[in-house]
Image (cartoon, rainbow, N blue to C red; front, side, top):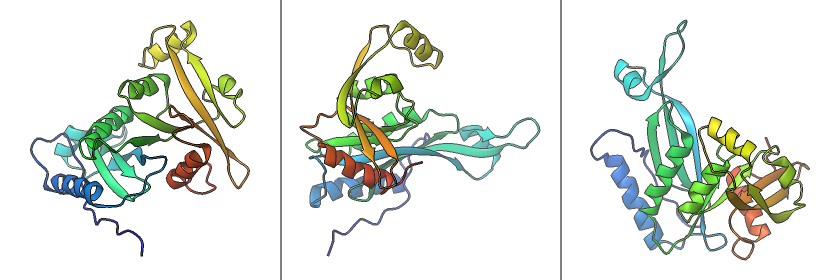
Length: 243
């Protein structure tokens, strides 16, 4: 028989004050799970995916005020919120979830989830953070590195295309913030000084349908081999799936 996965309740931390019973219960469950179970790791780490989505919530005046609304002048507003969650893809357990305003930054919510998870799992248990195509950016990668965290991100083919073209399958590149890139980053609200350097490992995976996926990471091959990165990819994004 395989390992028993925990029965989890919907547990989303919001900006409201006070303790939320379902959140407290989920945190207790997560702490117990990693303390009492023979959990699965890949490359000595648990692979934790962070993803976000927009939720339509009950359309009350109070919730529209607290979380924001969609719609324009010609259409009635509908209450929506931004949700982000952290999920251990190797063990099938939701570690943390947060709910915030509709216009909240997914990257900011991701960082909040990371901090929450660090408070739940044993400090001796390393984590590989998995992010999809909407997250990667020089400033975000730098933020995660400054936290001392390790990541694996799926990126678009157009992401630093010229530099990535130099890697056939698995290799390191150096990205430098030029004056032009600094201006672009500043306009996007993610300023970095000219001359900032970021080293990234680029991993290219060919799927069964012939399509290629590109991953970036700050984890060396000595800690995350190509085959392990490939296994994590299929756990997070599905076998042979490319959108």
